[in-house]
Amino acid sequence: MPNKNTGRYNVTQKYLMTRGQAINFPAQFFNANFKKNEVFGVVVDIPMSSDVLTTMVCFINGAANLYFNNGGEYTGASQRYRNLVQATHALVANAGQLLPKCQKTTKFDLPVDRTSNIFLLTKGGIYKTEIKAGILPAEEVEKRNIYVLYQRVLAELRSAQLKDDAAARKANK
Image (cartoon, rainbow, N blue to C red; front, side, top):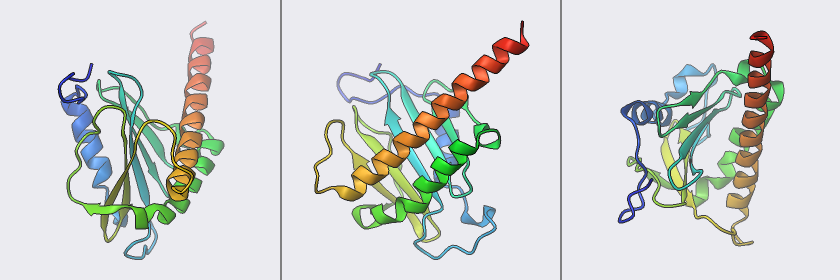
């Protein structure tokens, strides 16, 4: 449960370390010569409920993973599900449109209350913006577009989880 006074989420050390590694992931890992402000990764902190915080990590190569504030994770689905790779690539490839609405940052605070953090990873640094819970104003087109794209990735991750669970149940019969 978030602290009622601060609106902050309880997190494990494992979650903080994994989230920090994702946000600071080096562009050199990818076999591409990125321009200084070309986005190669997107990290989104998504409040799921009053006590569940999820961080979704997406890279230009289609990799997408979920990390939970309780230390849980869902990783590796991109190796099995083409639709997830396509959705993830679309998110990261289009994230550059949000860059002008972001601030360059070296601080990676956890979100407060029901606000989502969006971090864009570039060779030139890390950029941040927020999406507050509720309806996004029509004039915030870039945020709306990225929101739709990251919701699509979340839906593909959920679909992958359900398929993995069904396969595991079938294997255990």
